[in-house]
Image 1 (cartoon, rainbow, N blue to C red):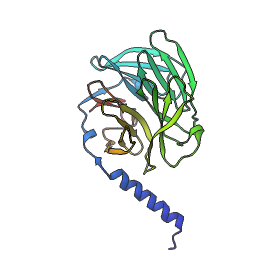
Image 2: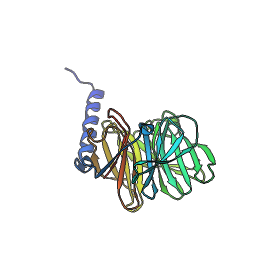
Image 3: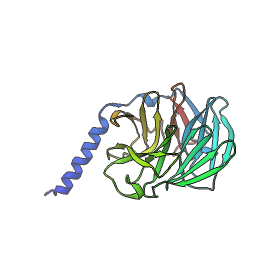
Length: 261
């Protein structure tokens, strides 16, 4: 059989991606959660979470314009905050007193938790970018992870992209981190650990978690997320005392869950 150059290049690209994903990979750490929370049905579609404080995480359901404060001690929703109409909400971040929520098309909702005032900003992304992750980077910036096309305004790129957004001037957007287009690599959540200066990137489709150096952007480690534990990992955050939380949508399981590692 005669092979075309294009076909050979395709095969080599796939193999390269698989090898890259296998390097520095831990297959055990995220296979045994230290604690597990089975979520109520209103959070079956939990698409993101962020650390709130007082042993509480703030969560969103990707179909509803609500923020849910989930008390880990009481194992229940302690408060619901309405901020918008039903929609495809994919990421949440918190920096007191503001919540930041982004939808898949790049619209950013800024919610003041004390006054309930909601401000809306359209970031330079479209539905083709398919935003999936959001987190605080510092007091001035957010990180936005793109599941779809990696360029601004829905343009293609030869990598998967994470952008830095200035929260005081959302027109100031710059490419912060990238992931190689490996086999099924597709960001579904992002979190910046300021204590370690590391960026955690979930990839639901490839069942992996990547750790990047916060300064250089180089990949430090990748972790396998076994399907029997992580049905559909969509959100990640870290508590002030270093506990890692990963939220899983219901997927094929009976309920959505939050897992602690």
